[in-house]
Structures are given as structure tokens and as C-alpha cells.
Image 1 (cartoon, rainbow, N blue to C red):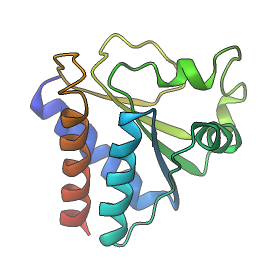
Image 2: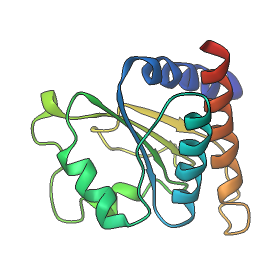
Image 3: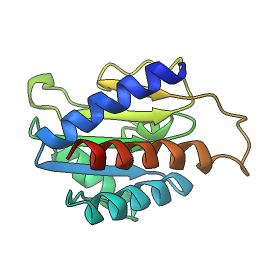
Length: 148
């Protein structure tokens, strides 16, 4: 995905941040720090969102979410939902499922329950892993603040 495509997807996400009252952001391990960063920055601009450090709390929230909820997932590898829905089919009732954005470096991800992928190029190493995610989270906050 090139810079314009990333920016267009972020603009869609920011529009949805204005529309949805219930918003959550999650990630697994290092990626959850990015969700916490997003939560803090959006809170300071007047948009509270939900997140949890404990993975079981994240899973519980996602399983109980409905069409009134926007969920943002940060997952460098794109494997977040492999952990959440290890042995089950997610969102069997697609009319009641939450709207889901995933920020990932996996441009080949095939998950029909994800509404929008925001993809970026990654070196796929542990040291640089959180930085592209943090940059995109910062772009989301900047555009949200600019559009308020």
C-alpha cells in the first residue's frame, strides 16, 4: 500500500471515529502498547476509546461487540485473530458484527470479517516492529484532531 492509500484508509477510519460512539483498540503483546498510546492520545483530544492489556479481556470484548462498535486492531504480522478465534468461526451473524480495521504489514491477509486493512511495509524484525504501528497511530490522532 502506498502513502496515498494509507492516508485514504486513515481518513476513512477518522470518519468512523466521528460516527461510532463505542470504539476499542487492541493488539497482542508489543502491539497493545500502540493501542494504549492511541487511547491516551485520542482521550486528550476528546475521543475516549476502550482497550485492555489482558488478552482474555480483549477477546471477551470482541466476542460481545456488535454493529454499534468500531474496533481497531494493531498486528504487525496480521495474526491477531488467529489467537482470538483459534478454534471458532468469528462473527457468524455478519449483520451484527462490529466494524473492524486492522493495521498490519501483512498485505495478503484473507479475513472476510475485517472491513479495512491499513497495510505498510515492514522489515519484520523485533526491534523495528512497533514503530510503523506507532507512526500510523500518530497519523490517526493527528487527522482526528485536525478534523474536529
